[in-house]
Amino acid sequence: MTDPPGEATAFAPGHVTALFAPYPADDPVRAGSRGAGLALSDGVEATVGPVHGDRRVVRLDGEVVDLAAVTGVLDRLAPDARVAVDATTDLPVGAGFGVSGAAALAVAFAANDALELGRSENELVRAAHAADAAAGTGLGDVVAQFRGGVPLRLEPGAPGHGALDGVPARPRVEYVTFGELSTAAVLDGDLDPVRTAGEDALTRVVRDPTLDRLVTESRRFADEAGLLVPEVREAVEAVDEAGGRASMAMLGRTAFAVGTGLSDAGYDPAACRVHPAGATLR
Amino acid sequence: MTDPPGEATAFAPGHVTALFAPYPADDPVRAGSRGAGLALSDGVEATVGPVHGDRRVVRLDGEVVDLAAVTGVLDRLAPDARVAVDATTDLPVGAGFGVSGAAALAVAFAANDALELGRSENELVRAAHAADAAAGTGLGDVVAQFRGGVPLRLEPGAPGHGALDGVPARPRVEYVTFGELSTAAVLDGDLDPVRTAGEDALTRVVRDPTLDRLVTESRRFADEAGLLVPEVREAVEAVDEAGGRASMAMLGRTAFAVGTGLSDAGYDPAACRVHPAGATLR
Image (tube, rainbow over all chains, first blue to last red; front, side):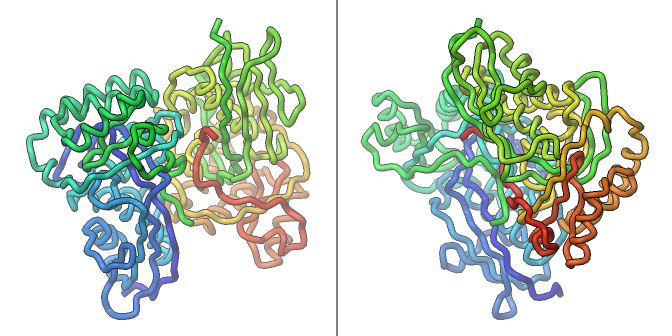
């Protein structure tokens, strides 16, 4: 049994996936996706500390929850530790912001510090990535959330497997959410059209690594991959008409825009900014 | 001739090299070092904008300067652009904080934005790394300054060549500087003892990626590599006696400590914190 833990808090940014090409694999460390997205200043903050009782407890915004990615990362890093996890987030869950990945990543950093596990950053990212992939809740959010900024995931998988680049930009980001969409359900469907559209879109972003190109290709990807849902299409077209640029967060019923696109189109969006850092201790 | 530029500002953290094994190479993109250090919240902020006149002008803290790493990165990214660079820093120059690398990196990000160069983050880091290496002012600062945190440089070279990990920690850092030390002069000497001591130290830090280990190994490295200068040795020993832990910033006449080591030993140090993010647009 691990010693009673100290307490530590860590933050991981949310991540809007703009486009992706999924590469599932039996080994969750190798499973992943190529793609591009935006790390957000809205994210997940998690405190890991001692628990009053015999069992591990995980709370999200005060409610006891069963988050498979968080359970999985603790099982990987400290299976015997009795800890309480208190996580909070401004982001909607299941709406395409990678909340499960951010929670797993923040918990990994906080647990490493509270329990003095002595792991390196890459080991923590690898554990969180594997837990998110094994839970079926994400295939690329964690590595993007560790890098921060506007990450381009050039190769799938955890550190040591994946390769990253980024678009050097730090815009304001607006978003409106119309409800949940199951990542697992989409990932269980036919992935070939998604992968083809994602590869084509990523190739074009790598050739022209700018923000404009990223949002344009995200929207084209959503159409070509057959992922655009009606409410999001309506919002994206309204932003177009107002002279802005928007697309859909993969995978959620969420429209996102850079700058003031959604406000200009008459929506009342949440707003944040691209987060320059990845996951970090507070 | 590139169009008259817009204006953009970027920040890059300072970097205290704690230990290193140098690997010079004729190709500055491949030249580099393995090693470990601390990215600092004290760093360099640089604005790139239009110049009033025919020639490029570079200022550091208001004075016109000839910084080879900055000239080199502009020559690589936008050789024909007439720009003014205004850089400011809280850090002492030539004292082991990687100011030249931070300036090159901040200028790369700001120039990319101001001139709409459309480069990716890795391309900007590669240009700044090559310029710093070619100028003889640094062999590993730039890649560490792009990552942020407490980077471990596992393989030498720019992105696409180097590989990184990190110690997950974000402590307060104190430092006292007693004067300059020429990086180029040390890198022109016999590198074998430095490389052997650096490799041994890095191996031990990779095995135990904690902050305590990093500072302990940094100090042992400074001794074994024959780099510890008398003023720094005195400060480091005073911190020891006060119950703290300190070492020397490579390569400068600078002692650094985590936490309040130097204050506790009666020095009047500058203080900052490990910077969680790498170089970023403001």
